[in-house]
Image (cartoon, rainbow over all chains, first blue to last red; front, side, top):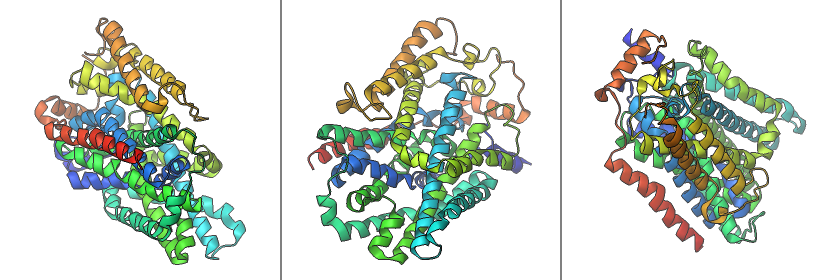
Length: 463
Length: 53
């Protein structure tokens, strides 16, 4: 009976007890690395390669990624790891017992967007390789792409039927793909180093500082995307001490390292998909290996994303008692729809999608950091996170905290002023500060000010 | 005190986690060292090194 309850807790948004949180540093690091290392690294690398060469691109992406990882670690992880809760629950002390639906909506949009991107990328790679190998005629892609997306979604569903146990098992197997990725990078660098050095980024600005800052910005916002994922995984570990290095190394470092594949590919061959350029360099065998790599990479990340997304949905009234398989289907369905109906939209607007991530998650992280460290001084009311009725500390006004709402608005406004997500036209201090970092600071400061001037004097929020 | 009814199992979990002994551990000194080293010091070094390339 006790075991049954533990299994069910694993599939719910309820807080996990210490005895249920058994992941050590290696297990956590492998799961985080498997979630982070996916095809999006090539696309992130591709976008960086539009503005920067190989060396500068890596330096900017690496710096940005590690800074972004630190921001996410400081924002969500302390509450998740202390109370065994996911990222959405960790936002309730700031957004309120109803206002958490704002981060929850952001989580769903972000994960659906990323998973759609991954599965469409995988489907396109599969189709191109099958056509190149002569396995299917050129006009069959209209069938193969949706069929591949369906197959991938079905596999994700099956892997996750047993909750985080499925996540752990798939992570242990698929983490091998990270090493295959580095082998592919070695092939490209060793065979085409001269071309890589001589390549000129296609859309580089005449201002080298703007290019460099944009590389850092891409790194930061890419890693802010891990906010929705990280809570569902770090809650399986019981100690911050054993989680800090796995988070920074396991989840932060693989992105810039694997993005080198995308930077090199776009600079030399004008394509970031390794399944395509590996075939160009090494023939069909290399193409098949690259495709297997793409499949493994995307599947691991999609499994982690759907799991985090399903746990996030558990917070919604009505969905908390839904059976786990039905909840999984609900979580996967939007990915299938996006992948089938508007596959090109995500590829064409990836830069804007990244900027949306920065615009949405930078203020959220700023608010969480300011609230946890400077306002609450690490005091969290676990009961108020799950009991949201009248009298709850996190009830605020009708379940919403105006300080967090105003801080979100101020943060989004700051981001929009500094960097237009659609045109990438920048203003103000962007060249020196990026858009994300000032956004984070402005949101945090506004949250502190409104809390001290309005919320605390009104006796709300449990401060 | 909140007034909402909650499942007995959730109540049991909340009670356990309200005690500091039932909670996980926040970042300690060693964690902060690694977070700041990997999240600030190393990126600064990377940025300086990368700019000169």
